[in-house]
Image (cartoon, rainbow, N blue to C red; front, side, top):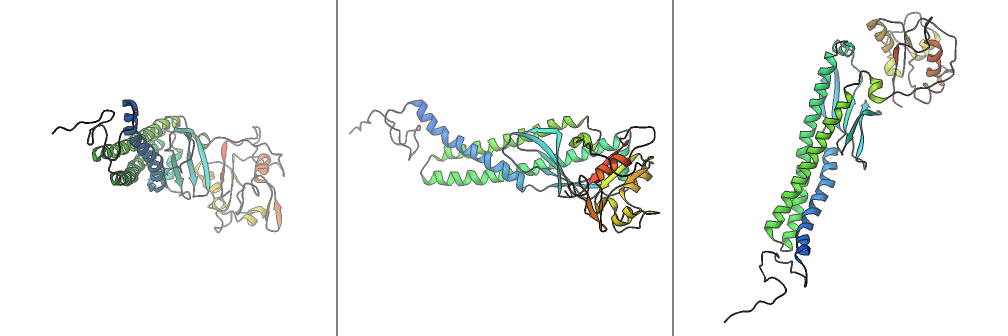
Amino acid sequence: MSTAVAQGGPAPGHPDEPPGEPAEAGAGPSRRRWRVLAPTLLLAAVSVLVAVPVAIVLTPDQQVVTLGQHLAVGGRPPGLSVYGPAQVVQVGNTSLDVPALQVVGPLRPRLEMGPTVRNEAAAGALDATGGAQSAAARTIGGGWLRWCAWGYLVALGAALGLAALASWVRLLRHHDATRVARSAVAALGAVSLVWAASCAASVAAASGLRDVTSFADLVGRYRLSPTPVGPELRGYTGVVIGDSRVSRLGGPLVGDPGRDDRDCGRSTDSLAAELASTLPAEVLNLACPSATIREGLLGSQQRGGRNLPPRRSASSSRSRTSGSSSSPSVPTTCVGRS
C-alpha cells in the first residue's frame, strides 16, 4: 500500500526542517532560511556582548618591571563607547586619560604605576639617546600582548559556557543536533574574531605614542594662570609640587629649613632634592603633606596653624629666574591623591 505525502510542507524528517520546527503554511525558502540562521546570529551576538566585557574585567593584569619601576598592564574597564583613550593610573587613585592613544573597540590599555622607586635603572628615563625608553616601550608592549592572550582564553571560556547553555536548551526542544553544534562553533568564532581585531586595533593605535617624549605629551597639558603671591624669588630652574610622597615626610629636614619647610616636613631625600642632584639644577620644593587639588594646589592649605598660599600661585612668583621668562625649564611635578 502506498502512502501519499501532502503538498505544502516537507515530510517529517525532511532535511530542511528539524524535528520540533515544523514549516509554517506558505513559508518561502527565504523565511525558512532566516528561521535557521536567527538562532546562530543571536547566539553569536550575545556571546560577543557578554564574553568580551567579562574577559576584560576578569583577566588579571600582567606585571612588568621597566626603568626600575613595577607596572601592571591590563585593560581599561569596559564602557558603552566604541572609541576611547587608554588610561594611566598612579597607585590606584589618580587616573589620567592618554589622548595620544585612542583605540577603536572595547580593548583599551590601562597602565597602573605604584610609588616611584628611585634607583639606578630609573635614571634611564633621562637617557638622551632614547634607548632606555625604547626598551621600556617593548616591555610594556609585551605585557599588553600577554594580557590579550590571557584575555582571549577567558573570553573563549565565557563564550563556551554560553554556547553550551544555549545548545542544551535547544536540544531539549528537539532541535537538530548538527545545527546546534554549528551555532556553537559560529559563536566561538565570532568572539575570537572580535577579540583578535580589538587587540590588533589597540596595537595599531600605539603608533600614536611615537612622538611622545614627556609625561605631558602622554596625558596632555593643562595651563593655569593664577595671580602670583608672595615675594619673588629668583634663581630656581624648576618647581616640585605634591603631597607627603613628594616631600618625603619623616625624613631628615632640609638644611636651614624655613617655617614652610618645617610645617610641611620637607626632607633632604625629597623629590626636589633628587631632581636637583640629578640634573643638576636649583629646584624649589613646594610639596606639603595632605595637599590636594582644591586645598594646596589651587587653593590655600591649613598647615601648622596657618594658611599656606596655593602652590600654583606660589610657583608662579617663585620660579622666575633672573633674566628669563617666568616658566621654569624643569617641568612642574605634581603627585597626589586628588
